[in-house]
Length: 349
Ligand SMILES: [Zn+2]
Picture 1 (cartoon, rainbow, N blue to C red):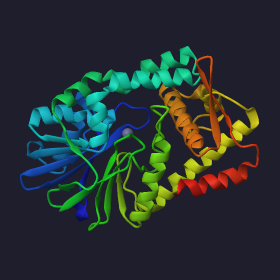
Picture 2 (picture 1 turned 90 degrees about the vertical axis):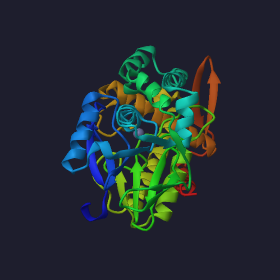
Picture 3 (picture 1 turned 180 degrees about the horizontal axis):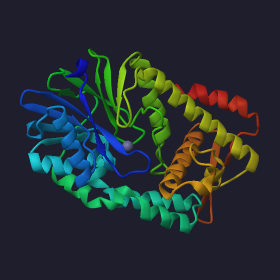
Picture 4 (picture 1 turned 45 degrees about the horizontal axis):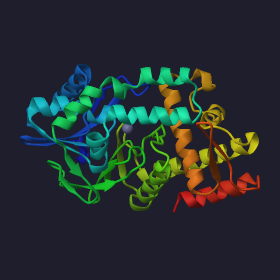
């Protein structure tokens, strides 16, 4: 084992610019546990198995697959692995609820209905509906459900061959039930997509009575508080030397974006989420029109989660008229720098 680290295998995935998802392998003697699993695709699982072999891990030693969250690139490869190798599957409790009681198609339909309410034109919705990787592998979610995954929640201990125990910590936000796995003794945390290097994890709104960005910022605050100096092993990209530092950068990013949206509403008055999203500066895109369909879907979800957070904080208010939702500043003063300072303090609560 390399310096007390689990092996990291990059399994191929066909999603945007990501290219691969990290699968971590803990192995000792005849027993292997994987964290996350790649995607329901021959090529994805093949690259994972080849990668394990390169580290001398025999895939037949696979005993358990532990999945950090519900997303297609982390969860659905397990349908093939567990079916073929008889391994046990464990999944975050909150995301397992989604899998069993909502299902990916209904979840995605709900998301599109919310985007329609948010003022997204039909042509954009149709582009988005055609591009979702989750819906393309809807049958894979059915196959995962048939494996009767075991739920994992806060404080559960998972034995990792050769590495003692990791503790489950619930970090909702990127998905409602996301978990990370922590070894306090080894000062390491397997992050899934809660904290990533180089990119900001996506946080979308799935229903108007939830506040996923509020949940996410609370999760980040907890990681920043409790994991100073811990090494982070993310779901995409290279290891993070100090997870607390990267986590504080992500909090600052969202505070900036909340401030940017306050400024936009200050300038244009009441607006739909679609109108706001078109004015936000999205990284890697020159303008709204240059975003691919998946990018537009993510940008709209992200705008909605920020508007909802501002609403919960009492900074904006939501209006409903003619089947459309609009938002406007709820405070009279346009002293946006004061509001943004307040958001920075609120974000760390
Ligand atoms: Zn994810």
